[in-house]
Image (tube, rainbow, N blue to C red; front, side, top):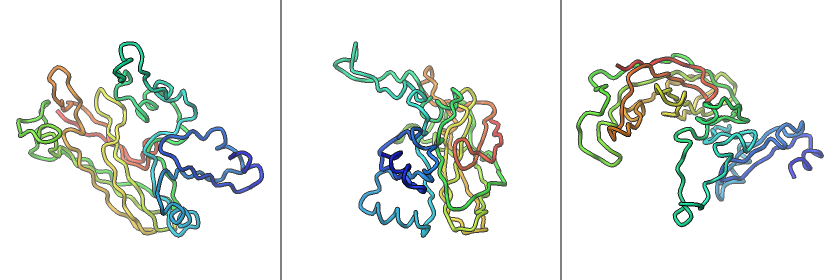
Length: 258
């Protein structure tokens, strides 16, 4: 359908109302397809919102909460769910053999180039990033295991202690007032090269700049230790990234613990 319409229309905008990932490579390179909007399921004001965006009354500011690959085979298990068979026939479940390497972490691990990466999203303006600052919080324990503390919903209360703070400057370098979603990724020693650990949506007038701030709690920087049955704060160098998407990270630095 998209190709049939695009063949007759030199300015075709494709709007997809989707509940999850939709591949677009069958038609995305058609010369008459000038834009694609992953509109998801916005509800009763869908038409009103899209008109505001398409006619420029508002600027797009959404970012993808998943990776759009080029092929089904780009995804873990080729996008196929675990089937209720064998020992799981009566009790369907998955062993999750891919571990934590799902979505963008799988693409990074296997060096797969996506069509649109996790966190991607365009706007009617442009943004620049600068002034990355990374600092440990003084007086907070950086021991391997979390300090003794009351157990609250989600685990020990000390897992929510802020261990480090990250700040950066985002400037609207274009000519349109718009919002940007700055994203913080952390490379944990021995883990995925990048994991989303924070984001901040900020409205920035044209030519102006704002400071975004991120708190990194102990759990953000820990990995589960199956022997200790607890979250272990890794000792070593953490790679810190801030930018516009999981593969558009203008700022990088290091956080050393231990």
